[in-house]
Length: 275
Image 1 (cartoon, helix red, strand yellow):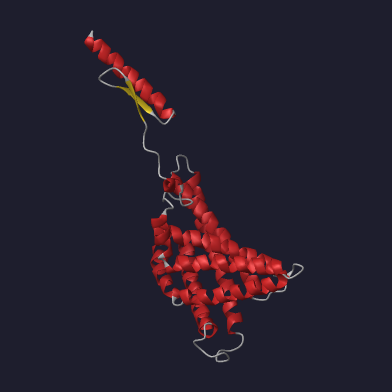
Image 2: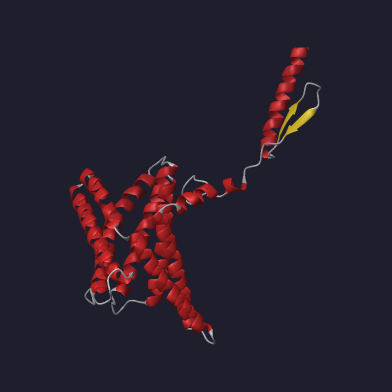
């Protein structure tokens, strides 16, 4: 009889615990026969915040880790820069005293652009690491495209560094030819086209893995990241149209493209730091 009572008590406790799980509480019967409610610890507020497309918690430690990266800070400054450009664009065209405030934000955007150039010096060194990935590629045609991508990145970044020497005041104005920045911008346009070609293939591969039956969450996230990266390079192309002073380029599209590219890039580099 005692054994039967114990079994019934255990069964009742199991049922109560299962029902309690739905109510975020668990119930058990004590030695004296009374029902005791056990409330599990509530999750911390930071646990409810996740970095997009990852399992990383967005807490103070994660924020400090992101800010410790020079690339993440530079991309964050890019967001502020193009936000200031967008404000300036709208305010300059407004009525009243707002245009004068727009001029202030125009100056802020220019100063932020100069500040970002310090972060980007010698960025071209990192592209030598991409040579190994190009060598490991099995598809011969895509391998050649990856080599072209490395070369385009090197040329574009070195050209930007040369322009920056005068922009930040290391060289006196007039030392470099007047059209140095213009030709540097054309290097960025060519790079954007090459990056789109490379990213389209990478995005297609990621989409095939993500659409396969039983695809893992990791592959689905990689697919989303690949599609975002491809859209970022299209934005870079729109930006380059304006920088290269093409007749059909639009300033508002240039600003929006720059802001979108900044958001995607910041997310990309922050995610790399958190891994």
